[in-house]
Image (tube, rainbow, N blue to C red; front, side, top):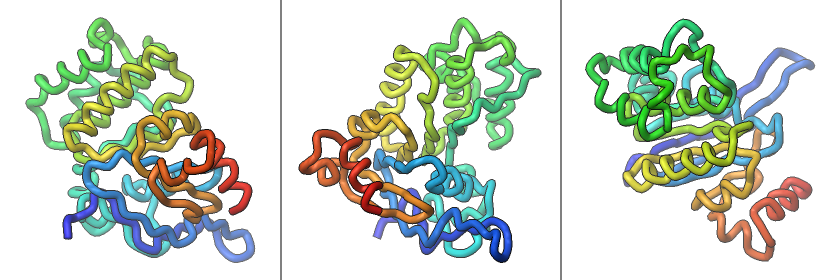
Length: 243
C-alpha cells in the first residue's frame, strides 16, 4: 500500500486540566493520498488550526498519531517538517529583511543555501519581481500573503497546507494564487486547504472533510457531498446543523 501524504490516527488534543479542560481534537482519523487536493472545512473553533499545528509540529497531540509522508511528526520531526510547507492564516513576517532575504533565510533553515534559481522562479510566479528588494514592512497585506506562500514553497515540499490563504486578499491575487497552486497539484504536490470561501473548495478540491467540535462529521468526495444540494456551501450548512 502506498504511503499516504497525511495520516491521522485517533488524534486527540486537550488543553487545560480538570473541569476547565477543552478538547480541541476528539479522535480524528483521516488519510489524505499523495497528489490529492483536499479541503478541511469547519466553523471557527472546530479544531482546524489545532490539527494543522499538530501536523507542523507546533502543538503536541495529547494522544494518537500524525504522519506526513510516513514520518511521525513527533518522533521524526525534522523529516516530517522537511516534507511539509505551511502557509499560515496570520501575516507573520520578519520586519528586518527584504523579500529576497526572507526567502534565502527560509531556504537556509531547510539546508538549501544555494537555492536562488527556485527563489527567483517563486518571486516571478507570485508577482513579487518588483518587490524583491523591498523591506517586508513596506509591503501591503496582499503582498505579504504572497511572500508567505513563497516561504512555504521554498524547499519544494511534497505536501502543502494552505490555512485561509485568500483571507482579505484581492480578486487578482486570488486568481493568480489558485492558478499557481493548481499547477503544483498537477505536478504531484498534495494540497490541504482550509477556507471559509466554500466556492473555492467546491471548484478546487476533489475530497472534503468537515470538522465540528474536534470531530469529523462528514468525509466524502466533493461531488457526493453536493449531491442534492445547490452548492457545497448548502451541503455544509445542512451537515453542520445536523451534527
